[in-house]
Length: 639
Figure 1 (cartoon, one colour):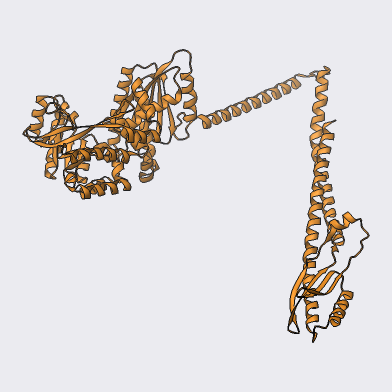
Figure 2 (spheres, rainbow, N blue to C red):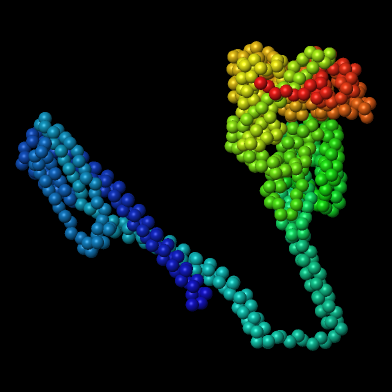
């Protein structure tokens, strides 16, 4: 069977199916129309019969029979019945023969609905039932069918005409190609005419050169289009860096390489990117983006072995090959320092977090990406804003424990908490100013770093549950009288901003008012500065009767501005400033001015992380109100 035959069979099948569907629709539509007409006619005749009988003066049986008989002679009916209570006065049935076959008559006929109505005659109630003869719909169907056939015939002719033109248009080149193929198969090559003159040769050469140039232009155009399509597929449109698709392909290839490849993956996240773009405009956001990219390119000092990708709007990946741990630490340190200086060049805060992890061939890509993401989460808690994730067997196990929100909540609720207090001494080094509560978390026989669990809890919006669990334990030790007061407690900004947690904390403040007047809530300066609602957070805790302290003070981007805008009670200067005093004289003037400004605002200053007599002496000379460090006191367990 040829292709043409197949085509004709398919067209015929479509036409027949379409004809059957249209015919069925026409019959159904005609019968529905006839049924509506019969219903109206039955209703009209039934009311006429009831009105005729109701005009009689009495319920004489003979008179009723004559009226019904007269009605039946005038109209074609199938069933008439008049009854009083259970007694039937008149009942007539009639059938009308049909010349059509019975099955066809049943299919085409339309039954009349039954009319039934009660009426009063001589103070008695009667009921009339009437049904007209079934009406054949063939005449109406025939009329409609003629119109449908006319339209269908026109459609077939028009479709045949269009298809005929299309087939002729397709057939000519196919036949020519078929003939040419047969000639090539039979080696019937057309002989080229002999060249008769030099001018003819020049004309042929000119045509050849013109066709060659056209082919070259076409090839170049196709190459450019292919390159453009490739860039659209694998390049970020804004930065022209490789996108996430290209990163996944190349990094997966490195990890699966059998040549024992190794290196590092650096993940850079612009946590304030959306805020910058929304509040400061696209031009400022793009300028900041370009500065970050330039920093990544200049500080990835591995030459051709460094590849930078833009994974999404606010995240970059830098893949380094053949880099050692020490080299990676230097790269991270230089990169973080430059990024910190870069952030200072802008008016508003633009935090950049850097996380890194070492990798080698054979590792699974999801595991490496997961480790890099956890490094970024931990970097948010670090003062330097970068973190090198080194997954020991213990850390890998702990990381797997906290992979989902359900596991984090389980770790918070089922872990064993050990509390200790680290004393903060007055400047006389004898009197206690307050004690900071430190937490040790053990879950399933594994010690979980508090910083890691806090980061995971904030990631999965569960920081309130963790802070609630820690506070409940502190409260129990307070009730037992084994807690040194005043006491400072680290709390998450996210928890205080959570309405449910704050309502619970308010209820606790009402029950334990004495405890709350002795509590100092501590926040990391970097974490608090990330929130636009920092003053409201501090005000909320002041309403509970507590004080607020800022930990690692001086490590933020706008420390002096924060000291003026935040109504805090205590600032704890980061220990790195004291340690740098021996090498950086500028740090002395910076600390001295910070302490003077704090005192002018009525803020208490504590120098933390003091580990030598010399550092304690420097803190005294600077005018610090309190000292904290291992040189003065070691943490002691509660209870």
